[in-house]
Length: 360
Ligand code: 13P
Ligand code: SF4
Image 1 (cartoon, rainbow, N blue to C red):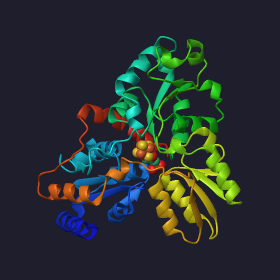
Image 2: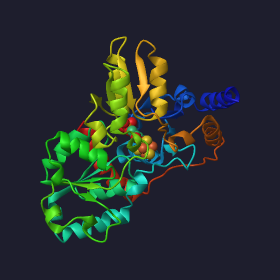
Image 3: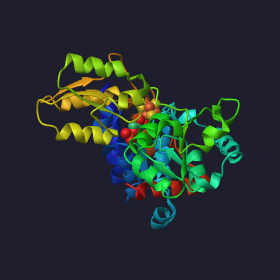
Image 4: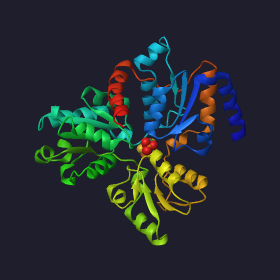
């Protein structure tokens, strides 16, 4: 039962004390969030891992790319030196907790796209920007090529940083976050070709389209957020006059443009917290977060934007049973599901991640 699992987890916490930090992303289930020491959006969780002072173990309740990022930031050279070379071990309670969006851009595909681009434009004049929802190998690619990592909370600042450097940007893996952010900066859609890694050549664009581009978007998306549709916005407005639509920028442009407000999961929470009682919201993001907001804010009227369930199946894989099992193994000195990024990849990823932490 959950009570037993909680007791097992508490026992390990007592044993490991401040050496253990349990981090939880806002899309985690309530019982996991209740046990986390700290919870946050991707940007906040990166800051927490970067700041981790005396902890030696991070149990990351989230998905694979988040655990990789935590490993890179918690074990950067200055932190390692402070700890006399002792590493922080980052554990992902279920290794099957991946991210389908991150899987839509492989490092070979990115390298091949870059080589193809070099045949029609000067790649010295492109800054690669990767959404944090990507493998460490992509972050390292970006670090090596003068680029930056962004999250949904600093995508605009990251694009501004990139445009101060070069006249073009290549943005991967989420076409929606890239398009929504660039559109908000006044860049026309005609200057945002979408690179399809499965197209025969030039990602499905002509050389002229690439030469006229300002932002080359990658053909990737979040399978959860792409389920929100413009007709859901219309239905919410019809059924609940005065309702405000609040969405995550991973939603498609047609939905994003109809929304009243948008932002990362952290910003969605803050926006609801700051609203007066009686405010009506229809929220377009992962179901667990919306349900938690509903419970925490009975003084407001909160609806889920879609009539169908939009849940992140991989975030959901982390549960108390996996957490208890991985923590007990940590305490027993037989760690399982340790996420450790190799030194060379970590070094270059860190270059791009440090830029991300600077442009907030
Ligand atoms: P944020 O929490 O940074 O908004 O990210 C949302 C998300 O989809 C994480 O995978
Ligand atoms: Fe990936 Fe979307 Fe799940 Fe976030 S919600 S982990 S972007 S699939």
